Length: 322
Ligand code: GRG
Image (spheres, helix red, strand yellow):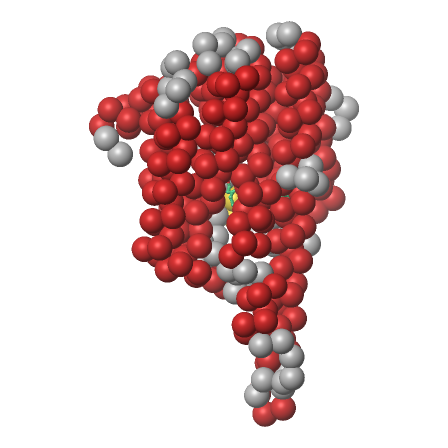
């Protein structure tokens, strides 16, 4: 990444993070269910890169809109993202102990409260956007985009497909291990298992599970910022490409970084026999796919009036170290 792009990302963080941090936990400070409020604040305050809210705010700026008008969208995106991480870490899902460099929510507050903390964040996302400032028609459009991206046609659907794929891979491994004298029993061959969970399927899962919310981050910012239809379409396409790039880099980091670098367990994908970009294309192939997706994002941005920050962020996301 060039020095200019790195400085731009740093400057964006310095001006945008205080705006987000000042509002992020306000809704969870007071209420009857105090411990639940604490559980929601715990995960929000644990850090995180704030990629989705920042992209949302930058998208509004990129189309000539005001940051303030996009803030409710930015908060809503971080609430949904944080809820998804809390639920993803539960024993019924990925069963993780470490997230954002801290013990996971259910390790501190128990499974029941972690489920409810996720539910509380999910529902607050829609309230903050419904009540926020700005034109009602734009907020209504943003609500619809958020529901589509977070729900069963987006992130939740992608998570379901991922769980189903993992269950199939596990059954296949068990079938092999349980055979007489340790030999493989009759069952699906490796090729047959891969056919169920091949590259197209991997891309579908990524597009839904990770990509949908990232794409929505840019499109919601565009809508709240009052984008023209052409600018909105350009940002939607940018988000699609950035979502893919983000996931490829996530796969690469899982294969190459340490727990300490990531603030979460590294090497999970290989441990679970998951199909990933590096496992299918090799590390070099995955890096090439990452470059291509980033270039696509940069091309889509070319027609926008204020694109410098988003260009810098596209480069940063491809090179992020955690
Ligand atoms: C439980 C409904 C439900 C969905 C879970 C997003 C997700 C779906 C699971 C997370 C699993 C995972 C590691 C996906 C890969 C991409 C991803 C979302 C990484 C985490 O996002 P970052 O890097 O996290 O933006 P921070 O902590 O920086 O906010």
